[in-house]
Image (cartoon, rainbow, N blue to C red; front, side, top):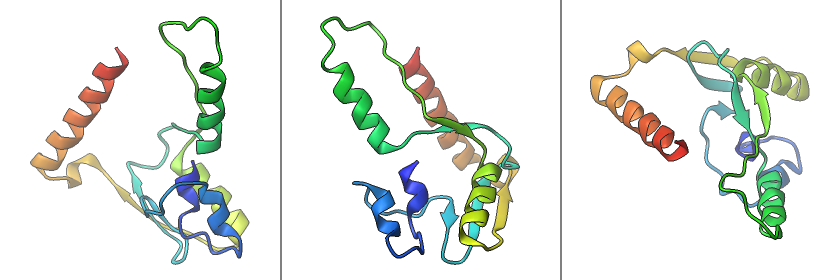
Amino acid sequence: MNYLAVGNPKPDGAKALGHITPFPYVFDFKSLKANVPGDGEKRMVFTATEDIGKFVATVTQLTTWEEHSEMKGDWVTFNQIISMVESILGGKFIPRYSILEQYSHSQKRLMSSTILRKKSQLD
């Protein structure tokens, strides 16, 4: 979730990055633009790096480890994030929604192989 702070125009906005190297991904807070996958209504899990660190620190102290440990952050959509940021910054975002059909065949294959690889890691 911390990556959402990249380009935060607030005076102490960089603090929200935690220990993440800044990289713009979906949101450009300075120009209030967003490159949103799909229609922006797909729910995703966003987790703050601090929460991941706390989870790992806690799990490493367990005397018995389960085969699988789970954690998750907040379930939100990109459109919900846009609404939250608009209310905080007081501006209106210009979202650019992209659909799968806009991507080339090779880009779709790359996305599919990445999804399948991640799915196999979870199985």
